[in-house]
Amino acid sequence: MKTTTKILKTLIIGLSLGMIAGLQAGTITVSATGVSSSPIFVTSALASITVGTELNIGTFLNTGNLSSTISTFKAGVIGTGNTLSEAQADAASKSTALYNQTLSWLSSSANFTSIVSAANTITQAGTTASNKFLFNNTASRTVNGISGNYAGSNGTFDVTYGNYGPGTGAQLWAWFATGTEIAIVTDSTWLVPVNNTAGLTVGTAQLASSGVGNPAELLLAEYVDYASGSDLIKALGITQTLNVIPEPSTAGLLLSGLGLVSLLRRRSIQEKRKNNERII
Image 1 (cartoon, one colour):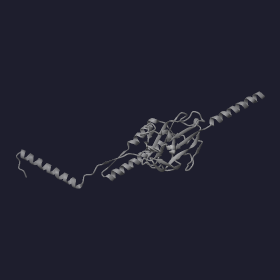
Image 2 (tube, helix red, strand yellow; image 1 turned 60 degrees about the vertical axis):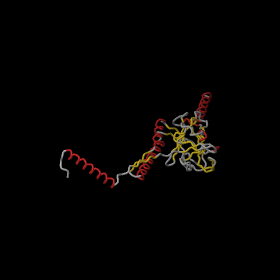
Image 3 (tube, helix red, strand yellow; image 1 turned 180 degrees about the vertical axis):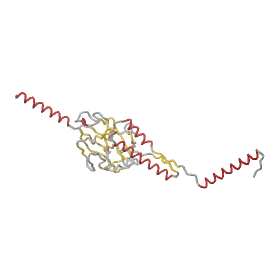
């Protein structure tokens, strides 16, 4: 009887330890603040991102569809109208529709799984929001020799990797949207760890590069390289091409009509002369 009891206790302890191990979480550290002259996320105008903007981190489930979505966004829109203002209004309307369409695709759970949403706890200072990771504070940074305040995103969140939908080893992307612009980036080291207690850093320092940056990392973004201070990674807006097709003026139509009448008159005269008919 005592032997049976010991065996049961051993099994219970083993199962309990296994459950505890299975529930262990790793820590993902986010560092996108320009610290140590690492790149800073900015708008296409090289201005600071607004504090409170969400930084989405997770996995796109179909990279082919992601590439297609990005290509459509980069292709931009063509605004058509009879006047410049009409063409501009048409382009603005199409840009809004394309932005909303792209944002809807990126946000859909059918296309993107957020690892932040799978977090057990999220730790950020400054501006925060439940179940979200934000650009949470601003700091002074030197860019191309000039000091300025730029918003950054930093903090940590704990995740039980084994419970993450796309699974361990899955690639992670980071993206944000400003209301008119979007940035999407990734790095080959941003892989969900296999070990539940392992740490992972998602940061702009890993995106550091010279020149135009690495296109494989900057899927929808552009790298701005400076000789000194922090470099910038800017979000991209929608390119607008204007196609103005002026309506014919009343005077133009009248002259065109008179020209047509004159042409028909000349042809009539030529025909009558050819047939030796009387010209009136």
